Amino acid sequence: MKLSGPLFVFFIFISCMAHAQPASPSGGDSDFTVDNQPKPFKPFIVYKDKGAFNRFVPSGYMPTGECIKMNDAWRDNCKEGKSCIKVEYDIACSLKGRHWAGIYWLNPADNWGDRKGGYNLTGAKKLIFWARGEAGGEKIAEFRTGGVGQGRDYPDSDTASIGPVILTKKWKEYEIDLRDKDLSYISGGFAWIANVDDNPFTCTFYLDNIRYE
Image: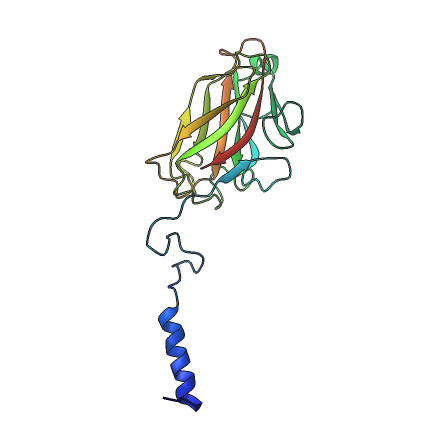
């Protein structure tokens, strides 16, 4: 049968509708494959290299930051890529204050739960990173994700951590298990905390390739 005019246009419209894929509720890509299986979680970068598309900012200095020096463009003996992070925790300085220190990688920068931000990281199974100590024996009380903003307007949906961790002079890969965690809203992408009781003299260490998988 030969179609022409308005009938032909109507036939093409119906054919296109029949082969169209349904859109996701958000209007973007669906989180499921065509056979209705969850898509694999793509690596989500906290830190890869200085100047890379890093999703969180190391802006949450704790308790005040005066006893920490951090260089996120360090280029000597890095594990991967062009740069890594060097952290110097000044023990003598900390002994005059609160005896502990740390840094949170936040989104947006300086956000402790008072502003909307963060990411939906549902599907991630673990937070992975590399770390090593300057001398070996540096003790990090805790490496953490989430936990920001409790009691504020935009709190993280969950938290997970490992520690204490005693570093060696050689690079080692560490994991924080995120299975069964609610990752629907995370603005505190990564953090470390150390104290003078565990590090009575010095504490210098390095971090590299921090990511969710």
